[in-house]
Image 1 (cartoon, rainbow, N blue to C red):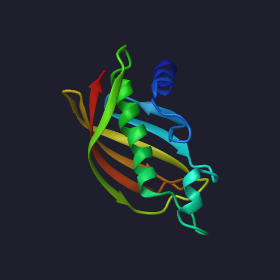
Image 2: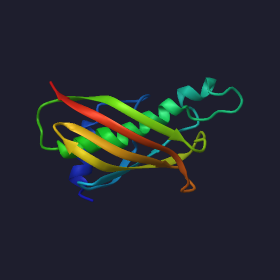
Image 3: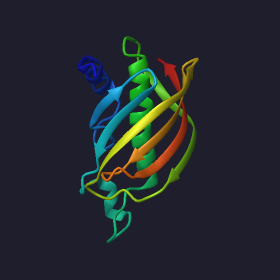
Length: 146
């Protein structure tokens, strides 16, 4: 993978801790992107979800898949764009298959279904540290330039 493209994507990513769920981009092409994130055991949301038996909330899994599988992918497609843009999630169909636990490293792979008129539709999968599918997401994102 081109290290310059990877650096551009990670630098332009419009999130910061505690709401940035991208550690690295492993691969990106015109057809797919793969990235990783490790949920540290002290993430803010584990304190109450669920008390005594923490698991990563579904909304956080969706956010992680969206940040890697849509926003990072859009940054790849617009890597030479100097204008700032906002991303708007317009459609989500999620399926949660197994829990993601504190301390677990996940891998997210997104496959482009289409990208036209500043709209990106992807099929996204999240795999746990054992390589098992933890969640699936079909999502559409609109890119709006400032």
